[in-house]
Image 1 (cartoon, one colour):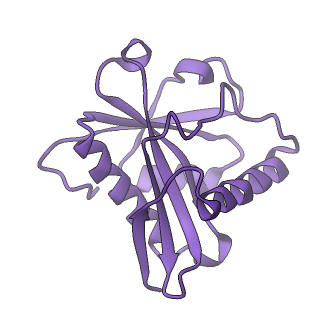
Image 2 (cartoon, one colour; image 1 turned 30 degrees about the vertical axis):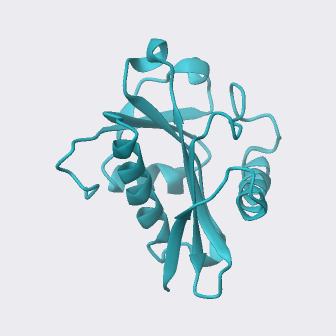
Amino acid sequence: MRWTITPTPFDDPDADSLRRAQRKELDARYGTSDHEPGVPPSAAEVPVFLVARDADGSAIACGGLRPLPDAVLGAGVVEIKRMYTVPSARGSGVAAAVLRALESEARRLGARRLVLETGTAQPDAIRFYQREGYGPIPLFGSYAGSDNSVCFGRELSAEDPGGA
């Protein structure tokens, strides 16, 4: 499968469609629509949002970056938000490609570390992040105390192009 990954506004219709598909899948996994601690990200908080499109131009994967306030985990920390791949594109490598592109964009923003939250009902996501070089970290920010959250992080360096 071939794809292209491009910066896309957070509120673009294709980006919105992917995020709605993610919500629907997560609502089914958790049995409720109330499974994300804290305030959901908005266009104002997500300066980078990437969408992967297949050869036909269909949106198949996405992910964004939300810089965190220094008070949360220190300076230079950016949170990965809304990573999602449509079921038909899973296993193709597009999710890893989006993650590498997000890491590159985070470096461009001056980030020194990436962090993320996923959930206990998402073992596939947990395996993915571990395979891609992300290690478990304590729950942070609005995720602290959540029974459904698992957090991961990865230090970034200027020399590392994202390979794990």
